[in-house]
Length: 309
Length: 309
Image 1 (cartoon, rainbow over the protein chains, first blue to last red):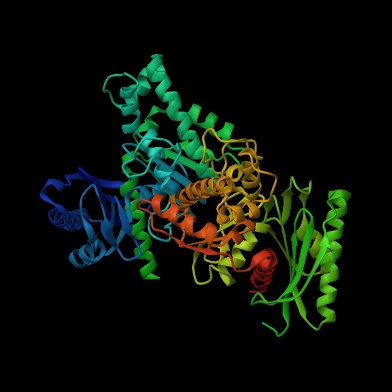
Image 2: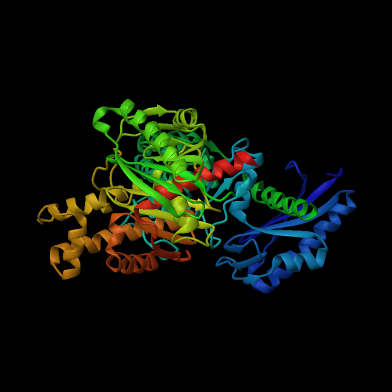
């Protein structure tokens, strides 16, 4: 590795693109944000992403860094092997060949990944899962998404949609989920679901973080909603233990900021349900909202070094 | 590979040990069965297994074959890396170092595996899953067990208990399972559970296969129990799709002998539930009750060739 080796990283979300220049050890050397601008339509979003990538390569060189590769991570269905963003309901694109578009514009090796699964790789290698070969990363935010990292690489699934813990059914007769099915973990325990369930219980329209704060403060309605949330999360996590038997479970996303109010009862709920299964190490994510960018950089440098060798 | 290269294979069950001499292509050259004799206690069972292994090595040589390695597969918790049978509630042993015991007695490379996961390897390489790198094998018999085979090797989990589909909770308020938890897939849809549920519905004490036969013949009570069974199985299988995204699902075990009466409604139920997930190829197991022995032989020859190279 030469001095100054850097990856250009772009983490595309529904509203903002987080961008960074990242060193091989995960250090963020430079960060910037751009609006995704999805109101202008998917074609304009794609053009903007390619422009931003080219701009970041220039910025890296201006700073005396050596940009070796570009990593871009996106939500939705992603064909990592072929470098194509297959579908995102959030942004509205279909079959965007980001690897060839960005590669042609920048002349650099480019890798495409899934945002949460790339964040999982970052947490597994450099964050809360470092040192383990078998890490399940679970992001609990507006939705619930996960990535299973084995030997530092994401388990890709046979059809590009693995580790969909948010859509595991936990209540046979549960509420309708955005996926069209009923009783999914996400439909009951995401941040959005916690806020909705608090309203349905007669509470006012506050965010999930506030529900947790009120639960901790002893408000009975909030305490009941939150206790039930954590019990159902423990059920979903136990299903993940049954099928995946991970060594470490790293929990991130907005709800993880609840800290002990989440982790203490969640660990207890999993312990009560695990039966013959071994309890994994249950830890809070380390990298915060930089995980996606750092993961994008790791994917980019992995590909660069694979092509070199 | 020399001509006559053979593995000695032993598949230890609660009542019988299935034994075979197996060629590298999975051909069974010789088969025999012995009683497990668990009524004599675990120490006597272990002694008998070691004797049977040594006897099979002699039989192979008498027939002009070249026994290169011994593979033994057992139920329960298995530490494959260290060659130790950790625990079997069925047979009653704890921490039996089969690899060193059989290796010392026979002088041959020995591999230890889990019975169902070894059968999964056999189905994935040589049976109904051949040609795919991502095969989930599900055995529905007295219990429900599974193995996930990636690139021809079983996914081992971090603590030796992966792919426990039988203990995924499908009914939050379901019946008690043998594992101590409630509403597990196995507690509702194993052959034993189907027979029990038919009795609970007012039917007589018949085996699950007969419940299926009566359902096919149009007996209303049997038809209702079986239809509900297949719906719940489809739910459990869909949870496996969510987390594992397999290319092929191979279903074996006694209940798979129901054939179309199982596979047609099961595929329909999974199709109705899969949402954004791709439907895997759903197929019936090919190798029948020889899968465990053939898998034991493959594990043995894998280890032999790994040690050679």
